[in-house]
Image 1 (spheres, rainbow over the protein chains, first blue to last red):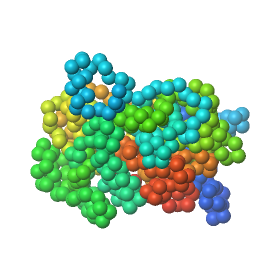
Image 2 (tube, one colour):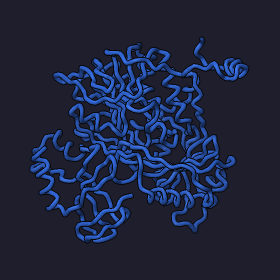
Image 3 (cartoon, chains in turn orange, red):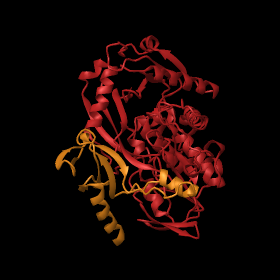
Image 4 (cartoon, rainbow over the protein chains, first blue to last red):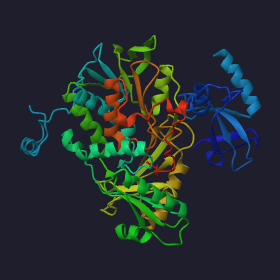
Length: 99
Length: 417
């Protein structure tokens, strides 16, 4: 059980109010018709599933019903923060640029 | 000293205060080179090593385990064994496993306490009942024992189940597989370990694989916490940590690791002589030989490697069990735990070669791997020994997520484990 602060409601609420939406920032191939089976299968099914820091989507399903992005450690459930998609994308891109 | 267990040995040890027993398996020092290395000493990994040695004549095998033997999901499941799956590929694989279960105690000379007490998969809606009819017929066509029962027939076999129409999801009937049942989870790991060890397999505990040595898409060896091991064949059977191992090999996997929780009650007098599962209210229960009610449910929805989940999932499960068995409402719960299960998009395992030559993966068993332990090891051993899949696991490739040949068992087959 963890407590998540929804970046839309600005309130810390229990995990039960939220629903998990999977890995964040999975890019849809720009032209699916011409994409190879390999890339299309990767997009549909392959997951990072890291042991450690994970960028993931959550929906505040019994609250404001909006989606947001959470950075959480899958090894110990520590949460760094929650952001709207646009804000999270900036931080994510900056991190990826360093890595 | 003869290594077989028998009634005579038990009696003679009884006269000697049971002080003459020796460890069931050897704990040798790790060698620098092996023909085959299996990563993960759980039930599936040990079964793989056993069948490699027994059926394929490969004796120079190591099984590496980062923790202790059988300490992962083998120790954390609810021990249900059944084979009533819908699709041919899955049904045949699990039925192969069930047949091996039936002879396993004799085969490995270790009592795995396999008890064929039957499994009920309850239906609570008309659609549930249609799905059950379809699955039972599919099972029968595949030579698998199964029957569809109405609510009264369920009640006749399980007198204390609540088939009243006043519940939130009344029981309308069930599928029943008489040959299904439960087994003693630890004994499976210990039995396979002992049998493999007798064939000369080295089981190395507290040995974590930290990196894979891959040259020109061929596995050359493994970097471990006990030094470098050179080998040309590696079988990876690491359940919830399969994505971590795959990343070390530069392979992407369609896996998500989720916590799956279970719990047991205090010990009770014999009260439930079968296994009851329900997908609709989401819970399953059986009674162990110690008398505990063994209860489980679905996964926590977020990904995690922490081997613990959230309390509301337990609450939901307990509510489901009480709906089925109101008399359990005052039973006290004793222990609770979580395991990390590797789920695939189609709820079917991956038993496959990879793009790295000599590297094989057996993963993606998700919430239902225990029932497959002997069958999984058997076909995976064949895959490793021959560098091509056994006919029974030919469909369970990693490649199916690129070709689209998924085996869609999700929801279709009472997949709640």
